[in-house]
Length: 251
Length: 132
Image (cartoon, rainbow over all chains, first blue to last red; front, side, top):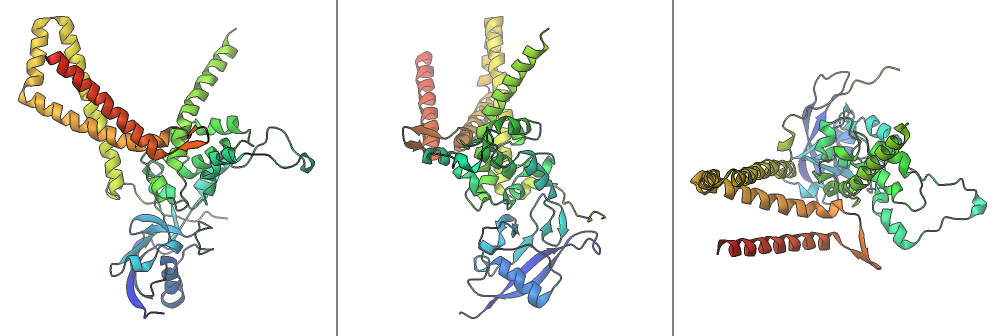
């Protein structure tokens, strides 16, 4: 292993019981070429300041827990390497557009509430029992939703979306991408239920196609595409509802 | 249980945080110039209806130095808007297939640019024919 070099890590600190405003604190961290930003944070916690708070779990870009802003970019800290920033300073901050709970940990409650609204699970047309056997699906049918099924709910797309920051009730990229993922699944019959939410004020029309959400996704999901491909469907759904309501209103 | 106190950061100056945000705002701002150009064309068509005098006034206005500068600005705005919009176009169309072959986003982008180039060339040829 090569000799460790020193890099300055500047972390946003905020302890609600002590601080009225967040502030930045600098730490000098010895690092080796294979060390990630997450490992740098772990070094700070283990050796320099045990009160530094941040989330992490798998260390292999699967759990989506360690998302944070590194030099203004939303990234997973476990797959971002300190060597790429040295000799410059690395500024680590909580994900943009979310309330800060403590230091680098944000409150994801708003996202979780919105995720429930779109029923992100298969809703079959008829109840099935194990004796019915497995669902059958062709590879082509699977391709229709496979890319969006890679979402790990890391929230990087929310930190990259200014519309979510500006319009608090906007469902946001990952929720709408996951709604699309189930709508596009041939085994699912829950489109009408999801469409009510997707076509509402907080749904697909809140997206103005900034496009950054798709650029920052660590799993190659394309939320901007998923949202905007649903706009024609949402418009047709509105038209269908208008025609139906006109029919029911006619005496 | 009492709710935890959290800190929410301001969105003030959000467009300064990333070049992509500034490019997005520039793309949206070009719509204003395009809207103004549509009004200019509408004015010209109305002038055509009103008679030769009104049409001559309109022509004099668009051929003046500020009129020519406005046309150059509109050309730049149209070009930037079209280029950036066509780059995003694949995001707005459902995945396309030709038999078993899946049409890629790059192909959709290039096809849109090609159609734009063809339409512009046809318009230029038609305009050149009209001038002769």
